[in-house]
Image (cartoon, rainbow, N blue to C red; front, top):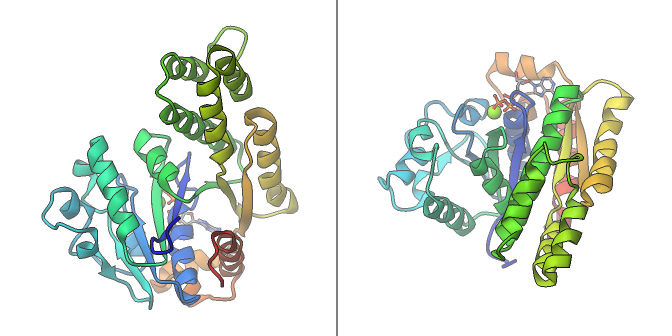
Length: 305
Ligand SMILES: Nc1ncnc2c1ncn2[C@@H]1O[C@H](COP(=O)(O)OP(=O)(O)OP(=O)(O)O)[C@@H](O)[C@H]1O
Ligand SMILES: [Mg+2]
């Protein structure tokens, strides 16, 4: 990684309403308060509301202007926020342009993100496992999945991890037959149960060792992070470890549990005050959880905090 490009954090999750936006917003503020120059990008095109959580009313320019080429550079649509070191790129009104971006448009956006002259870029990725979401998550240095301690959210998280993993494998190789093998593995109704990624890779190895190695390299490189949000009890906190263990067993991939965020009424109170939690209640359980996550996320990237 070049020294001059920002570290990209992509915050996503299989399910809606798990706290992606409040975590992205407050993590951005936290990193900015630590002196990192940050940009938060609202890539949740279905329901862009990051600007509201950051206290930016009705941004003038949004991703839509970039996609329509009203502006030529992503840095032209950087909006100030009430926080020092933190700027915003809003996604509101960008749905039409972004619902189905062409491959080249996606590449261009990612290139421009990498060119931003800041330390950290945080992407609020919206819910679901659509290819667009997965591609932005995979383009990030750290893909972060937010999960709630609820069965449906956990189930969604596994689906999301699996979809992202296979998407990454599929993009890795152009060898004929491999993409088909991956598609087949994604089919839930494969005879005698789902083929595990390990079996898939070893089967590809047998057919084509070079393709097998390419897949293995991609698998080794796939290291998503997980945050368990709205924890209430000890078991909720352990959920992150359980998910990581299950993914190791089944997928053979390493998931990093970067921390949990306590359920906290300060969020509601902060909304009432029209302020971010990090600002209104900097020592609340929520804010403290975010600070711990910020510290866990960055040292490995060589940023000293
Ligand atoms: N740790 C927490 N404690 C209390 N409330 C929380 C916590 N995390 C999130 N919430 C609340 O849950 C709601 C959903 O949060 P948020 O909008 O960030 O979710 P989201 O994943 O971005 O949703 P969407 O998929 O709709 O974009 C908000 O009202 C938020 O204040
Ligand atoms: Mg959201």
